[in-house]
Length: 113
Length: 111
Image 1 (cartoon, rainbow over the protein chains, first blue to last red):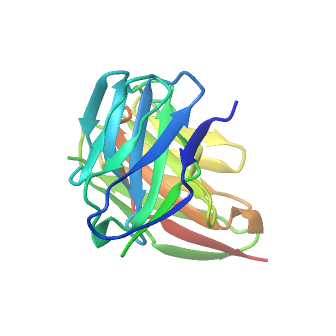
Image 2 (cartoon, one colour; image 1 turned 45 degrees about the horizontal axis):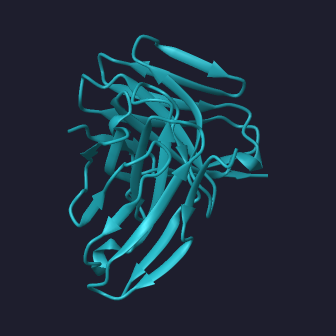
Image 3 (cartoon, chains in turn orange, purple; image 1 turned 30 degrees about the vertical axis):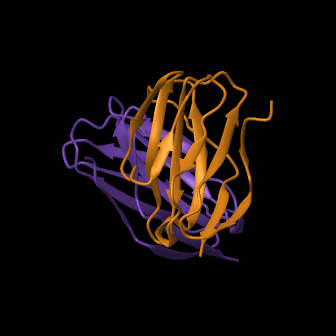
């Protein structure tokens, strides 16, 4: 099993550009989530999904869109990149939305200039 | 929403000593309290978790305690080793829904 995979590993965007961060898991997990990690602020939840076709907002959803058309994939879309979105983005998955371990992907380091 | 505070932000101990990291949470509905370890440039990895129906859980050198009345939980690492050096994050939430993380504790274990 590859676990949770993310692409790309690094990305540089100009202000106003859009892009999609890809996330996939091969563990047949129902629950998937996106976090951003900024220095000194821990991980903050952006969006999450409890199953295919279902998504919900987390703590910091503004400027981001998600969709969950399959169990395996959970892409994160930046609509119009801003310097404040410079961060490391982690995707995670869990067996279900219950109290189960979340498995994190390797992360995507995004810089917006 | 839930608010999690974590202390201290940095912690330095001598190899073999114990380390304690403390977190408080605000939402009494939270029932799941995981702890993650993150090494430099790596992804967070779960090291131990506790659910609200349990007061203490231990796994070898690592233990977590939960006080629901006071809304705080702590991570205890005994007999620390240099490879324990990392950033540790606590988190709290109702199951995995809207999980909130603390700001992290950078633990340094000096040989």
